[in-house]
Length: 334
Image (cartoon, one colour):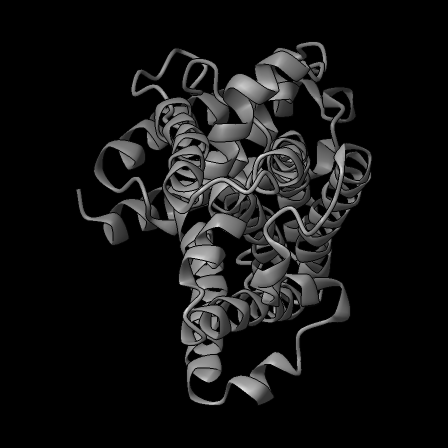
């Protein structure tokens, strides 16, 4: 199927359906009887179009646009009750599917974070005193191997430290998401800032012969923590891209369509950041050697990305209403 020919042939019906959905504004009674019949006919045709597009061109912008149109038209046709938020289903299925549906943004977020970390590492390796000078005071203890990974803290202090770390990690994730509203520039800035900080600390420790201490300090919680930051930042980039490239929608429409899945991505990282904070306070600060710390980090981080792979895939089967079984049906911006 040639995508250009197919879209040009079907565009008129898609535009007609888009017009009816816009005029209904969520209430089919705003349409006339003939328009409601036309709505049903065009909706069923759009489902068939979507099935063909997903089979032949799953990643094409037209496929995403028709999927968004079908998602917005469906409640007008079926008048189903609003879907309630189910926390268990969200954490076991929907969160992973929302994250996995836009892998490009995950890749971009990871590239900005780890690319800037690499630059920070190189900077610290070349000019350690200058690089270390930009490390905030609250992270200065990470540059002092003599204090050990527990940094002299007893159980009470570690509990307090755990609360601080959880709050800090959640704050960074929320910030990376929220500043995506500034056309994604704010999210990139947060990623670069935190990436450089990580790279400078690691590079300085390795340059000083304390590479093992760096592994002991960050390996157990770092994989999971950085994964969550990547997810939250990808949500912020989705918001930014909705403003930069709204497609056939207005910027407001594009942002509204993208807001719900992006917010859910950011919310879904919170429980995992709590886990990372607990591991950082009670495992990373126990003075264990680099190898067991690395094993813990790989197990926890591996579980996170295994769930992304296993639970993030949408079923191939397309039922009669045009939505993959169990899929999240909120509209997505192109």
